[in-house]
Image (cartoon, rainbow, N blue to C red; front, side, top):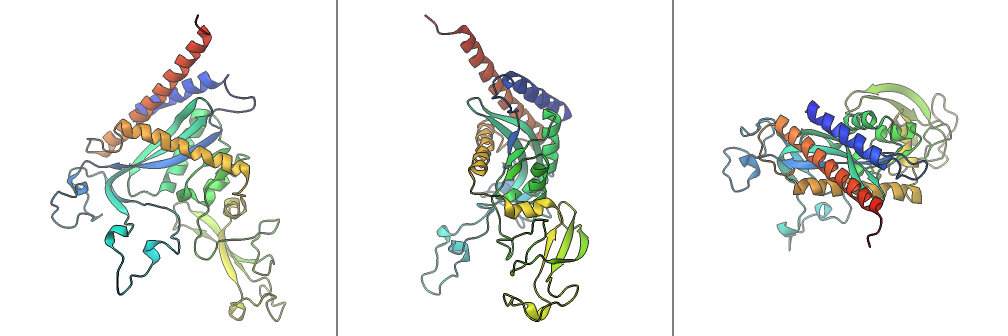
Length: 347
């Protein structure tokens, strides 16, 4: 696969060279990227609902003998939180129950996932910057760091803007683009009760009474995909000393040491809440996310979704070659268009 990645390196270099003189002043090829993942269904009988399977079909501890490298994963219909009016959250009535045909059930497959980074150039099309294949049991955010390392190596700089779906709503995604003087356009996913948080000018979370909370202790969290430092904040009226007899807003936890919260020490943890998702700039960047969808549609037409291969290395090589071919087709279109323009109008 290293050799095939070398081919992808060169397609990116050639496309960037062809478009260098076509971009508006101050704009760089690849400065705005989008990232997404694509499911790949393994060629095994466990994925055939008509095939007889001895034992449990979806037992993740028993990989299929037809492809021992593939893993069991879930293709969710939505990675946003469940809405209150959704069918899944509606209790089944005692009479006239909800028909099974109306229920939204997640799809499970044995297979792989293909991560893709794309960039769009207005009037010229979408282009592949990086790709990575992993077993299907890996989360979407696990693709972020290795793919962005590929992008930086091929472009020679860190992109300023990124567009993602809600699966990439993680603090380190926001921090990455903030460090490049840009931002990440990612839908907000509410976790627990924290649908909204406010911060002081120096980045300290505010309590319900709009007072900067007091940091009580720090610790390193090693249970997440990216180990990081977290800070535990407590009520500023009770720590380190009690300075008030009652909470100004009568918080329900005042009698139990007051309100408390824990948040990552990274600036990206604050940016999740502070980015203006209604601004036109944010909307313009977020629109770039469809570039990966159009490229993946081309990849599906080339057979990426159901390859007739039976091991992880072959799948990875097939995927890389597929995206190399897509870039070569794009490069051909650019050169043909330029050649036609150079000839001028015909008589």
